Length: 447
Image (cartoon, rainbow, N blue to C red; front, side):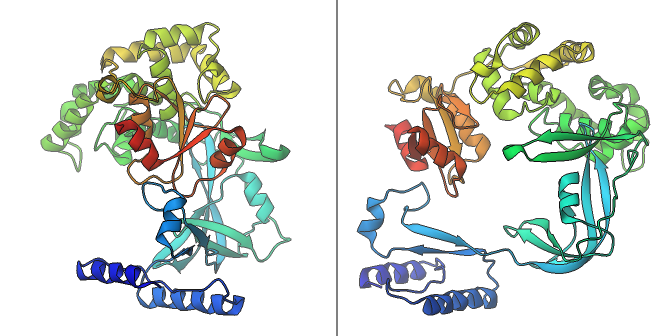
């Protein structure tokens, strides 16, 4: 390592900054020597109690690094190598089935507790019926479990294959409605099977619909928990979303409940009333039209100028939603089908009376910067960004008068690329789309 780089490291230490452990290797290093260096760093991380899921190899020459460009976080002078997730053997016991708001019944593996990265793990998603069948799971079999990226528990393998046992429930675990198996084709003609409860009145489905309606990305009713919603539904105080905004009818009864009181009730009411001031996007997300999340709702808000009425008329007519960025045939069909259900139309129109909708405003950045290069463009962001969350970058894109896309297509003008960019980067390169680092995007905004 050259002296100037070492001086910088020593200076950083003197200022109280920690230095990530590193070793210096030469281009002529042998495979055996490289493995020894990797082992040394891994052991150091373990001794120092530092979580580690991989290593980065980079060229030690600042001028060369600068010539490669950079993201807002680092130069593009390194290659990251991820370690394979450590796997732990345990015993699979059973499957817990959980009914969601759409009626899909999600399988969760229950297994003997294992400690992974200092945490006790005894549950992991099994995704769908096809995943269970492919693993040939049966009670008592030995399985391998990991925490992918040191976060998400995952069942990796069954060590006792050949004894698959059908554990699919014939009735919904909540309402006893007969279950149905749905099949859909995904990439490369692969068939995926999922289990469903088709009863709209299923208590678990209703509860999860209320949970979705009240969560942050929808009506953002702060502090009202799933347990509270379940209790109010069970008591008959909540039958529809409208009832949330008229709980004052049960004021005395709610105050008298165990765990409640005047302060708890008033806090809940304040949060509910605060949610009355909302936006086109939040309201649309709360309606839970299949596949219409925050990004899609913002695109619809932009296209219809924040008018719920204009959007409704388009959905009731023959408007082609595939002309919008990120909208395919399935999303197009979902919107039209949703608005041709009389119950949905009644909910859509009457519930609006409970809210005060904010007028759609353009960000000052666009109006102040006459040379804004992004107005009218379609921009997609991918990878991990340093200065923005995913919602944050999409909001910034929209504020510039641009469209925040969710997928890279021929209509995409720019791709903002952060760390760990994957298929979107490859697609953009294939289509010849302009690729920006986060820093380049910020520089163009401030130019």
